Length: 66
Image (cartoon, rainbow, N blue to C red; front, side, top):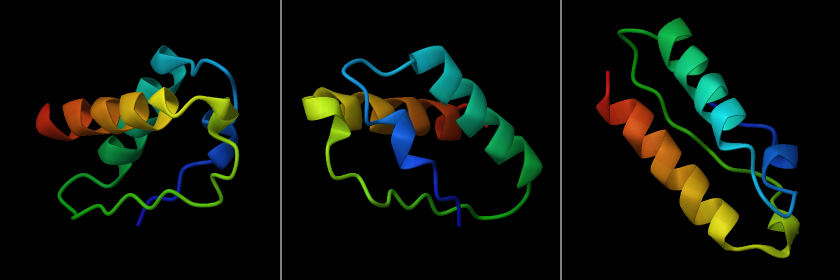
């Protein structure tokens, strides 16, 4: 399973390019394996719930592009 760093969401506006790059890299490392992404310890999410929605969309886009 992939457990992303919760600090990536604990900001007012996420760095989408950085997150996309990290997720893409993780998927490349785990090529031909099933990957489960588990978000953990997201207490503040930068006081912006949209961060979680956007992060999820990015992860889905990267998974679907494989």
